[in-house]
Structures are given as C-alpha cells and as structure tokens.
Image (cartoon, rainbow, N blue to C red; front, side, top):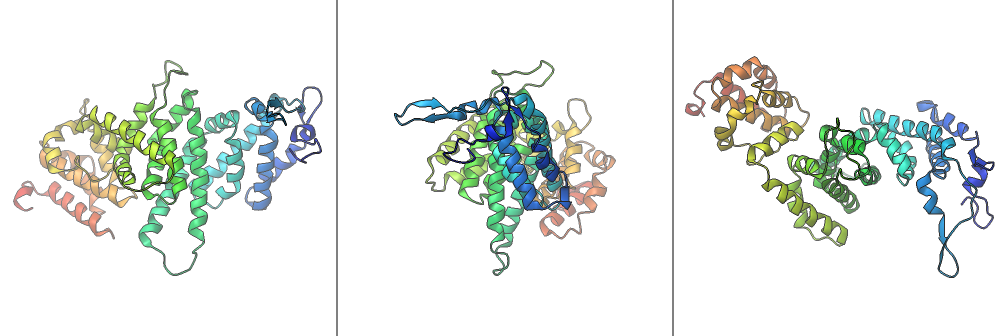
Length: 420
C-alpha cells in the first residue's frame, strides 16, 4: 500500500489496463542503477529497493499476500488491480543481474559496494520467482563467497581484539551486514526441495556450507548463529524426491551436504554450541537436530572417507585423521584408484592456502605421506611439493614455518625417525 486509506497501491500506480501491464516508468530507476560507481550510492540503494517492491507485486507467489483479515476476523482477499507477471519478468531479471553484479565485484574487492544492493536483495527474498532468478544468475555462489570473506574478517577482529575506541561502531555495522546476507542465503535454502539446480548451486565448491559453518564457529551475534543453523538444517534435511532434475544431473540431497558439514568441522562447532546456554528455542532445536544427523552420518563413513572429504573440501583442520597412526594405515590410499595421486596433488596445492592453519596441516600430511608410502619422497618431489613447501620455511607464522621445515626435512632425509 502506498497511501494508507486512499486506495492508492503499487498495482494501481505502476500497472495499467485490464491486463495490468507494467508502465515504462521503471526504466528511470534502472538507469540510476546502471550508472555504477558514478551514481549516488544512497539514490541507487533507494532505486533498487523501490524497483524490487514494484516488481514483486506482479509475482504469482505474492497473490496470497493480498489476503487480509476483516472486522469479523475472516480472511478475505484485498481488492486490487490485476498485474501481469509477464510484463515484469524482464526488469526483474535486470534488477537481479545488477544485485548479483554487486555481490560479484564486492566479493573480489573491498566489499564497499554490497551495502547498496542489500535492501533490494533482502526484499526479493520474499518472492519465489525472484529467488529462482537469483539462483539462475549465480547469486548463491557469490553470496557464499562474500559471507566466507566476511566471516573470516570477523574471526580476525576477534583474535586481534579491540584496540582503543577507534572504529568502535564499525564491527556492529559489519555484523548487521553479515546477518542480512546470511538471511538471504537462508531464504534460498527454502528452494532446495523444489529445484534441482538450486541444490546443485549449493553443492558447488562447498562454499555455501563452509560459509555457514564459519559463521557458527565465529558466532558474531546470536541472530547470525540462528539463521546460519537454520540454513544448515534445511540443507541437511533437503530431498530430491519433489524435483529429481534431469537424469544427467548428479543426485544432490541432504546426505551430500552433511558430508560437507563434517569436512568443514561442523561437529566440533556444534559441540561447542551445545555447551552454551541459549534463550531461543529454535537455536536449541537446530543444534540438537544437526548433532543427531551429523553423528548418524559420521558413523556411516570410514575414517578414510572422512579424510578424503575434508581434503577435497579444502578445509583442513587438526584432528584424528592428521596423525602418524592414520598415515601408517592409510598412506597407500593417497595414490587413488587410478594411481594418479589426485588427493596428494590437492594437498600440495593447499600448501599455498591463504589460511595458515590449512597450509600447516597440508605440510604435515605431505610429510607423513613421504614417510609411510614406498618411494613417497620421489613422488612428492616430482609433483612439486618440495619447492612449494620451501617457500613457507620463512613464513611469518611460526607454527606454519615449523610444519614446513619438518615437511621439507622428511622429503630430504631418508630415515626421518632417527633425526626426529
């Protein structure tokens, strides 16, 4: 409603004729968005939000929103002008593409542009049609990437602590932004059961699951934890039965996401959350439900499957699968079914990770492979492990430096156990 009590609505102003065709005035709002960095950020944010509200009015999924309760307590339909969704599709696609472009540029730069698009993106998440358009435009991938970088910044600020009063208000603003972005990703999880392509987008690269797990581990605010847990619960319980998708598309369901969650260390994060006192019953419910699902899935996986999934996800963390005893038993498995040492190549690549902990674990694993695999030293050298790890010996992180030095020593020295 534009003017309460006057009968003037969005549909009566922007949709004309018997068929409710969208008027051309929306193009002025789109022109503001297409000015890019040259335009006024406040004007662009307002234009995007206005355009979102105008276009959502025509979406078929919003027809139920026209139901109101009358004086007698009965639900009746509001009298409104007809709206043509066909006339709104093109501008809705253009607006969605603009929002995704803001996510794309901000996830690869300073991130200053994303605040302009958040109000409109949050509004569009109320509508099934716009959520599917957002997914089709690659929005899930870029949203997950932005959340991952935002979660790591929060972790960094936690480790660094507050230094004086400089910028005291800035962390709260970034937490609010994290909440709004997490809210959008959570909304997208409600399309999992009905869309095979959305499930596939969530499964690509494991970025979405990793982003939500990172946010739970950092736990910047309770509201961020709540929507992150709910999103993970939706992922863990999704099914392909409603819409299996084409036969050529790999089957993706909750079990796939649960495996990714285990690889990202959600079990440990959930165990920490279980020790805290929560006033929100939804958080308690999601913690208990996820814990049960994770335990059940973990029991069904061998230790090698847990390790393989963790390496493939790229989220290495110290644990029982990164020990001498594990590699004594499983070093031969790293050669792979085709003898191409694919998993070892992934480990070698992970030594260049920007995450120091990941790089340190990768160095340890490579060193243990070298010790326990026949001719492992020659194989590691041939695949370029020695050169990459040598670069880390003078790293500023002393823990990573130590593991890199030990790894190089294991590659160079034949009988490591005698000099250890």
